[in-house]
Image (cartoon, rainbow, N blue to C red; front, top):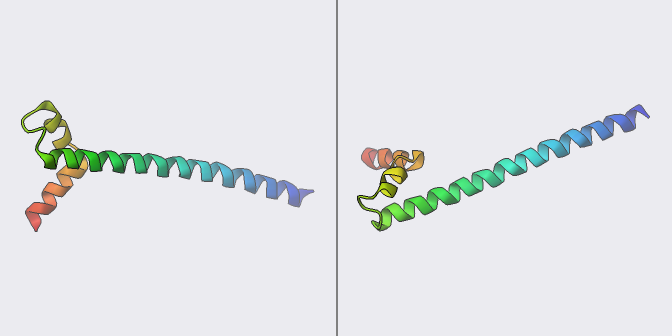
Length: 72
């Protein structure tokens, strides 16, 4: 009986962890897609001089990309 209880406990912990990891991956995917859209908008030049450009340019990924461009 104890073996079965241990297996059940393990499975509950596993599925809880699995669901949390799955949600984290989905959130990361959404964030990456949003970053790609923001970078595409910036590169298109459609937002030049607007408030939107300021918001997108303060974005972490954009800042890192600008820093990398300066280094290369």
